[in-house]
Length: 227
Image (cartoon, rainbow, N blue to C red; front, side):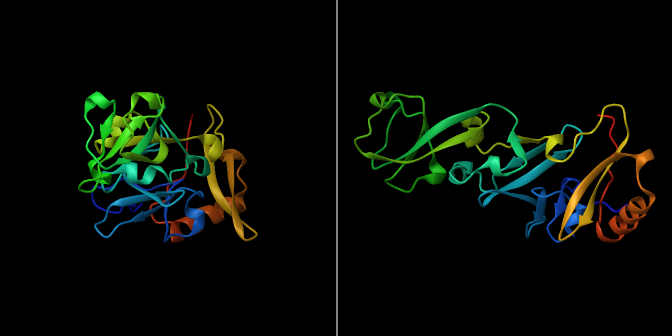
């Protein structure tokens, strides 16, 4: 079967993911990907948060993503994972961002400068939200926004990639020790996901799934799991 990638070195795109130009039944809602002009794989999260996809591991249900401009802080205020099928793999840090009209030093308890958000004469700083306001010199600063940061904030602010997870419960629950076939079946104006052991699979549905997915879903792979 032909591989489905945005570029030669890009991650393999397979169910539950699909490319946006493929039919909807090639993937599950919320798992749409697109290819950038330079053949990188892009995931768009609610609301308008765009991340490059570096790796997809379906077995562990994990996707490695990175901000395309190495400035995740710019997108954090719009990030709402509750409206997506993904969750942060590790605990989150909580930060408050301040725009100041003068430079601060470590003695003022500002945790991290944010050059990618700053302009000359107006540096932006990230401060742990748990830090007491009384500990900060805010005389020349205004608060921009609060944001939760996936994993360790300092690690992420350096432009490093981070992990997102998805759950079987977002798609279907695969029964232990049984080979299971999962496929989207046309239903009215949308699609339903059906997950059933192979031996119970209706012959008509099986015929539809194989013929339609081979003709419309480039790179599609059926899920066979002993999870």
